[in-house]
Image (cartoon, rainbow over all chains, first blue to last red; front, side, top):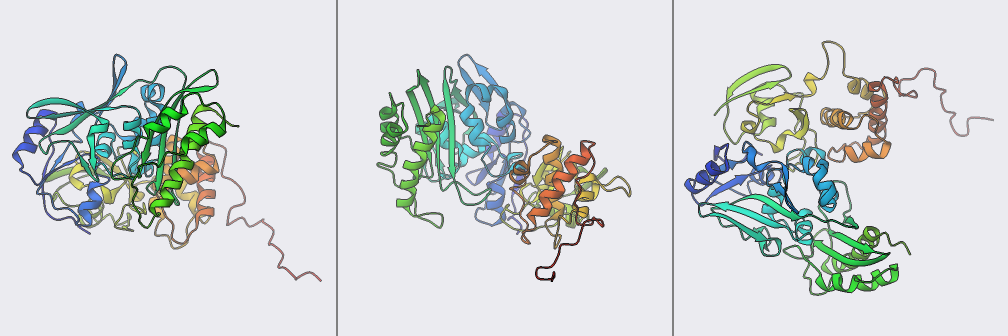
Length: 286
Length: 177
């Protein structure tokens, strides 16, 4: 199908983009990589009056460092995130999870910031941002502000960005030390969304878990951080202890029931996949 | 909007509505119909083309976003009358049945082999996960890509192709007495 008509603006600086967003009124939409938005337009599920394309805003691309924080431009493409040496070194979980997003052609267009701002609970990267205590840098006419990942995801496809703000960058504290990572994604066919996904980063000391970070994909209208499991994992060194700690991974969650799975099956998956992901990340095999 | 782009080596400049998808511009605007449209959901990959050296699904890109880009479609792969090694391998290994997915399959394969010249069978299958063949002709597609990889590495195509004349005809069961 062909999208409905809209005006198109392609600014080259973030300041221009913010001004264009302000001028375009409330039915404007930001176009990042377009791999979610363009299909939605094509199916006529959305009717923005203006699209503001950020693909020519070069200041929003690329990965850099700010002391002990990794700074990833919102318009950095998935394929670039996967290959980036800094991301591989300090946020390997992000690199691994991003390599499971859709397929190679989509990863050549889709962007990290676009995926987070879209806030689809079945998207893989929000859980990673949550688990890694990422901070999201938003810029609008009132200036710049930083939003913690736990406050950024508000509801299904809804974030705490104001309508006049643009997501500019994502700041991820570097993981240093003996961290292992794993993104366990459960789906039935290639390129499908996660029925459930579990993002884990685990620091071990002398064979037992010293610190664990977990983010759950598609276990509610926003990504979920099961803090009780993270706490229960500290000190675990056997598969049995990991499984026992993971048993509460679905506690308090309210996952959807849809064509992919019923809610109770998703809760089962969350427990199983958490144990699997943590064991693998920590190198615990028995 | 006035949009200029290079497609298969030729520069075109046209007036394009912002809502025009790249795939529609290629087909309807420029008459380059070698790139088919297979689905409306970004799943099938049949419309895969290369933009500035990266495979993309042209149904998920606006034509205006491709302004200034260098695009290669299936129609720009051959050098004169000489097919690209991946095209040759698809023909030789019968990597197609109805042929609808073939342009996208070949464009995705070319991209895959640019990034990974020596893929394993598993890497080929994962690398082509964004392209669907509804005839389910995947076995020969994978064979073709592996053969093309070998050819591109200078090691020659993989033997045992569909057209091998010296391959013994398998005995029909129950034929021997």
